[in-house]
Each structure stands twice: as structure tokens, then as C-alpha cells.
Image 1 (spheres, helix red, strand yellow):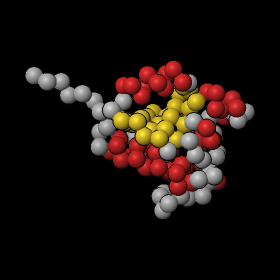
Image 2 (tube, one colour):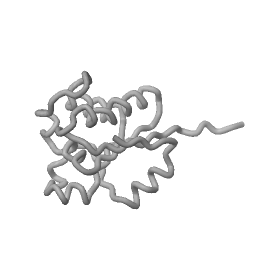
Image 3 (cartoon, one colour):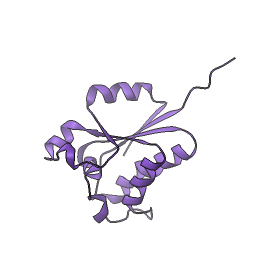
Image 4 (cartoon, helix red, strand yellow):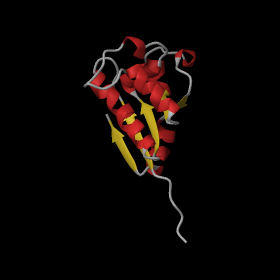
Amino acid sequence: MTENKEEKILYIGTCAGENPEKAAMPFVMACAALAMDIKATIVLQGNGVYLAQKGYVDKMLRGGGFPPMKELLANFLELGGKLKVCVPCIKERHIDESELVEGYQTTAAGALNLEALEADAVIAY
């Protein structure tokens, strides 16, 4: 008898309001993966960490004909996606952890490398 291995995809988002289409892509793809019963994690790095800041996505422009980022983020979390935020990146941007949306986890390079090794695919935007 073979075990069913849970499939995992890791998405890395590095953009926010400066490129709303590219910022939306990891969330669009991750929501599709979750709907397919594939475990999805999004890690925000660089300017992407702004997406996890409370209120930021409320004022973002829509990108690429996708739903508003506020809706994408909410759907991702409701579907059970894991949202991780790079600690050095938020510190560089003077964002305190208390300013981040509910449901996030912090991460840094070592933990992210381990997660990438465990994933079936890693996609960066």
C-alpha cells in the first residue's frame, strides 16, 4: 500500500502596490492550489511585506484584471493558506509585528530554505 503524499507549493511574493499585477499573482495561484487540495504557503519578502501590513491592501489598485488584493488575501487565508512574512524585511521597512494582519507567521532565511526543500515546487514573483 502506498501513502498519499500531501503536495505542497511555496510561493514567494516580492511586490506590493508598486506592481499590483505581480503582487496579486502568488495569491491567485495559491488560491487555485488550495482549491485543488494542494497545500499552499506564501512568503512575503522585500516590498511584498507591505501586503501583510494592516490596511495596506485596502488602498491598492487592482492588478491584471484580478480581484482586489483585499479579496485575494482574505480568500487565501479563508481557504487555509499559510502566510509568512520575512522578519528582516519588515524591520528594514520599520513595520512592527503588531501592524501585521491576523493569520501571519514570521520567518527568516534558514526556515524558508527548509520550507523550500520540503515543497514540491517553489515559485517566486
